[in-house]
Amino acid sequence: MRFPLRDQPPDGLLDVHTHAIAPRLPDLTSYAGRWPTVEQVSPDRARILLDGVPYREVDERCWSPRRRLRDMDVAGVAAQVVSPMPVTLCHDQPAPGAVVLAAGQNAFLAELVAAAPDRLFALGAVPLQDVDAAVAELRRCVHELGFLGVEIGTRVGEFELADPRLDPFFDAAAELGALVLVHPVDLTLEPRLAALGIGFGFGMPTETALAAAGLLTGPQRRPGVRLCLAHGGGALPALLPRLDRGMVLAGRGSERSPGSRARDLWCESLTYDPDSLALAVTRFGAEHVVLGTDYPFAAREDPPGAVLEGVDPVLRAAIARTNALPLLDRVRHADA
Image 1 (cartoon, one colour):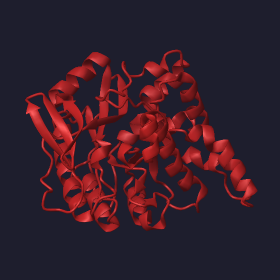
Image 2: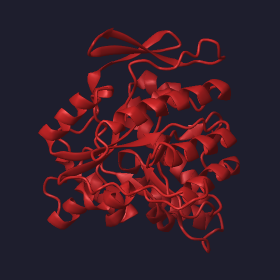
Image 3: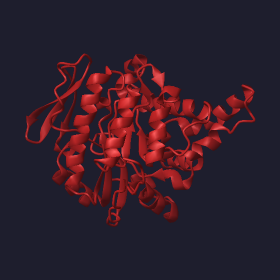
Image 4: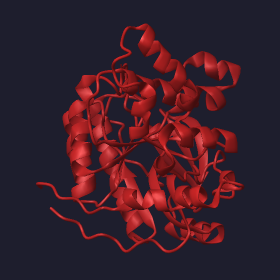
């Protein structure tokens, strides 16, 4: 089927990394597992709980298109790509509840972006622990809801994104031209990192790097997938030369190197540091880095694009806007 291409977003920044959550999630009390819930404490504030334990407080920026658009106007953001809060991906929980949760989140995201279809785009959720169900939900996201693609975590329970069991999902993503944003989930990090207080600063970037390293050093499969790593690729850009050397030491020097394969990936710009951003540009290629802010959370870059100050104007324009335009193209040809 074919979806009409939206008009090009108005002039301004294109932010591919923002999050949202509904003021009410599906009731999963009848399903085994540890599930997030949302408890609204006032018209503009809510509390996220995980298995009944408080996790984070959020406000209406997570669900109100009016508030989101107002903030975008103030910041000069022309369009946002909105994805689920990572804690709600729940790839490590029983599949039946994850199927219901993903469908409920996607219904909310569809309503959110419908409020401003020229400025808000969505990446949906999929129950990746059930690959057949994930493929079905991915197809529904693209075919029925008009999403750009989906967001996934860096691992699925005990197995990695490089696991061949996930090949059907990535094959479907390539077929659909779907964007797949890979985002770490704080609750899956090694407990010692939380004890040291470095889960955010060290754990999340290394978790992204670990998932990507598995993809880049394993057998070359899944051609054509548009895979975007959150947070500037995490620690991966700094580690690629060592991964390249490791392949040589393992007797695999004749294979395409991880450093070369990394240029098939995308990343967004949320590094908080121009030098780190410059390294990401070197590793992934100037045309494969897009703007990301983590709006509306405390970790967000504020103002959006601050890391681009002082960057060469041509590169700045590419990261701030033009690189993302192909990712916002929703015209796809596929069998229903």
